[in-house]
Length: 381
Image (cartoon, rainbow, N blue to C red; front, side, top):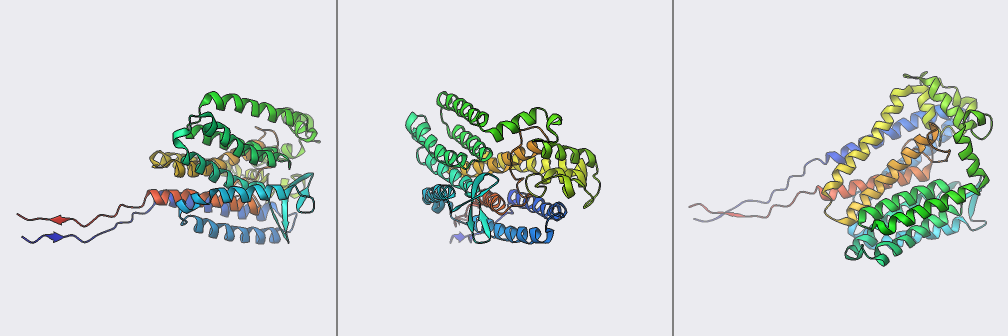
């Protein structure tokens, strides 16, 4: 009998993991807009809101574009991305190019905009390490390519960031990079001693920096320094206490009115605690926990090291930064100016966060692509 050829059929199931990620990200972003309007009442709230909306639109468009880019092409351009990030960090330190605010030279002025290269350096670090380890998988256990050369990549980024100085971002980059090295297969006999020395050196730098060591001593005794170096932290803790379980009501908070500096950036979480209460703040924490567990669970099926490291590095930068911000404003960690992802005001951090989201979605979209069924012949007897 003549054979019957089945036509090719492709079924494209909904990528629910990406749908959940997008829903969480947009939900937190919308909450950030609402709280920005409330936290910015002392300043020009409408101006802050307009700028943030512009950044959100740009960030979403860039994330959408990145989620459909060819990952193999990006892998070939990884070192160009890393080199551009290094150049931007160097330019930040150049007098007349870098912009100094509150004693820290972390920005580059582009007309009315200020760009923070240390935020975009996170992207370069993730791409560089993912490309390096995926290209040297057979030599990861060696000292040269498994430890020494990756350490140079990390040292270049962290060294330039700490010169600005930005101790918090340096610590964040070092922690994420060390985790990526461990997950790639770097031997602990090299990683643990050097990690210990890096932490010791970091502590020494903090000890000899009057501003940073003052933050540490204030953190150890907040009440004794409530009117001095721990003023902002103390006011944030009061905001949580006033808010209680359900909050005082949206727009009814007082701490951001006269008492809490930078309420729309680093300390927006206490404003949420005061106005919307413990229920809302715990919901935000659960959102980041959900994001972390969801992506981590999906990473178990990673077919390639390069894609695994891209997604894992992106996830760690978002979630670890959220943990640090929440830890700082609740008095669990020494004070450090670090934004709350998706929620705090700020263009550079928001855009980088959405870039990481786009990378994760791109990786999952590639993994979930259905296999195309080849035509096959069915014979009847």
